Image 1 (tube, rainbow, N blue to C red):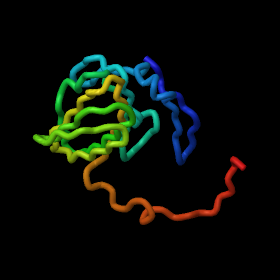
Image 2: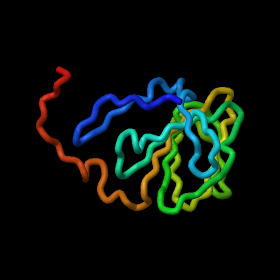
Image 3: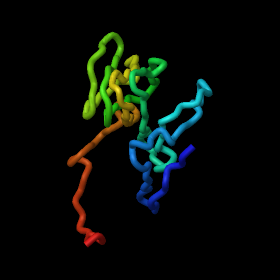
Length: 151
């Protein structure tokens, strides 16, 4: 099982590297509930010491589907398709997805995903507590003077 590479860390950040997404299958984990081996999946909360989100990178082999539908108690999920194409279902709605598709699902949405392409589907899932984002983008940001060290 491949480990996430730590790039740098200090009081205000943690930086990691997963490597090339084509090598996502090098990651695996034992599902905490089902105890099944899941290949091609890596969670980043602990690796990045995140306190407000869980981010995972996931893979789905060609012509396959996630073996279960699921819901959450508190957290919404945003799926971002990075490679491949197929279908996504929330409750009774099923629609086509492809590279660049982004789907936000409320906690109680029954969700599942299918890869109908002939390549491994790679997607990212961002999980956060529903309705927890009080300010965002420019409303939460403030410009500060800093001299870039890369120059």
